[in-house]
Structure formats: structure tokens, C-alpha cells
Length: 246
Image (cartoon, rainbow, N blue to C red; front, side, top):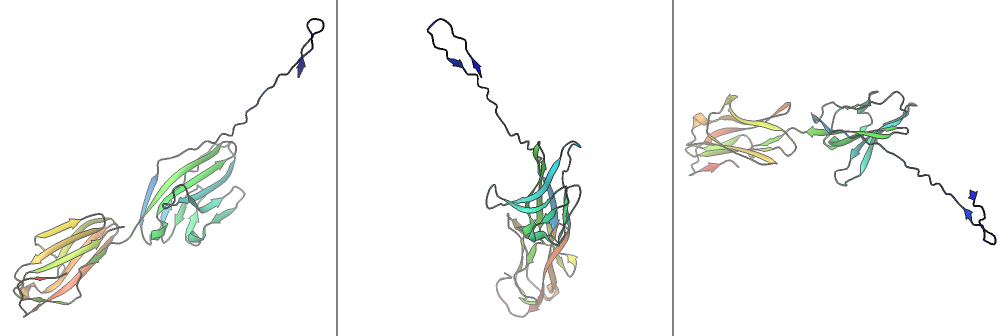
């Protein structure tokens, strides 16, 4: 504080007050990567890569993994945390299935459908703030193949028999669907339809005869797996204008 000098007789002296303001600003640096995608089938072992890079002069406080809640935007669920002093804590869902590595990545054994989602690795550094690294885990389930009929099934001789193969691919990667008779490719015209959830393929056996009897199978090829639905058709003497297997 500095006081002013009196100027002139009879004039009051007014103190001159100098005030200096200091602004304290907390700076947080957030480094965000583009999301990396890791893919695996139910039962597989997968590793979510970490990004544990920092300067030698930067003091790491903690490294945590969280999982974004797809139902509630902005909500994160705790997955794992470890600190430089050796503290390591994992969530109940991953206990016994997860192995965490010194480079920040972690491995999940026997993955389940509920493990799918967006994971975030957060590196908390003293003074600097936090850096984040995103990894998306896609869990693929084997497709479900259904011919919609019990085996064996009686097919009337002289009728047109339609076989319908439905593949549930709601959470699967279906690359192709093929037809076979007794283990050999079935070379018949087919009608295919697909959307986001189902793949349907149909073949028609015109004027069914005893020679057409056999084991018919529909094979769906997906990531790391082949799923098959099959039915044994047996010729029967009943006659009907047209017959369709559901």
C-alpha cells in the first residue's frame, strides 16, 4: 500500500491503494486418440492395447480403464486402476478373467457378449492433467441357423418342396451362406434376402422324387466359425399340389 502526499494547505490526504490481482487457473490437457477397434468371438481371448507414453520428467499418479455406458451418455463404469506404488484394483465383472500389463494394455480371457463396448484408458499425470486413449471391443457371436423343421421330414413325391434357411446375424459377421446335399454343393437356383438382423435363403426341389431324398444342410460362414442347420428329407407317397417346408 502507498499513501499519496498532501498537495496544498487544507486539502485532505487520500490514500492511494494499488491492488494486484492474481488469477489461479487449473489447466487440464486431454489427449484423445481415434478409437481403436478390437474384435473377437465369444469365448476368445483378446487384448485391448494401451497407450502408456509419457515423459520421464512427468509424474504418473494413476492409470485407469473405464467403460462407457451405452444407455446413459457420459457415464463411465470402473474397469481397472493401478498406481505407481503398486495398487491394482479390478472390477468384479473381470476378476479372474483379466490380466493387466505394465504398458497399460489388458487382456480379457473368455470374452462374453456383455464385455462389448467402448473402453477408455485414462493416464493421470501430475501438473499436466490427463490423457485418454479409446478402444472399442466388438464381441461377435456365432450365427444361429434354422431350417424351421424337425428332421427327418416326409416330403410328398411329385410336389415342389421349398427349403427355407434363416440365419440370425444380429450380432454376427456372416460372410456367406451355402447349400449342400449329402455333403456336396447343391446346384439349384436360390432366392436370398438379407437385412440387419436376418439372412434368409430358399431353394425349391421341383417335382420331388425318391432320388431327391437325403440330408440337406445350410451352412453359414462367419468370423472363425461355420454354423450348420440340416434336415433329412424322406420321400412319402402322399400327394399335394405344393408343399413348403416352413
